[in-house]
Length: 193
Image (cartoon, rainbow, N blue to C red):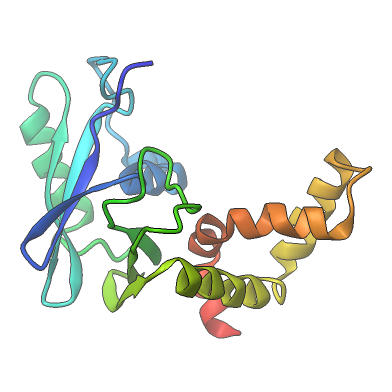
């Protein structure tokens, strides 16, 4: 499998690679806003890259690079049409920016420093920095909050059906392992609890 070109973010003057494809997630919700991909590149199946910057405590789009002929113009038009002030207000959740995440957001490195930007509707809320123990506790807090949502029951039920012989604690551990992405999907609901 070919290594995929990463989206990036600049925070406090430092450029970080992101393991999340925020623009793709945006296009899943707003399909009509997605331009056609007219060039395929095995290093960038999604057909674009997006580069963010935290500026004045806001998640701003620095640029969008669309593959193919007129790619730069397509990116500029996307910004002009859908993000005129360049603020990516659509996103709420956590962006992991530490150098320990690896390719797939490794969360088991006991020597790592875990760093996240907490974003709410495009506004920087907090810059979190944890050692392994603090990060584990943070995930447990998110998990307890997530259990209050209807989504938890639905996910638990689905997992229990596909792992019918497993104990309750096993299913909860599966959910806990995905709590950051589940929190991102339900961030605004969690903020209301």
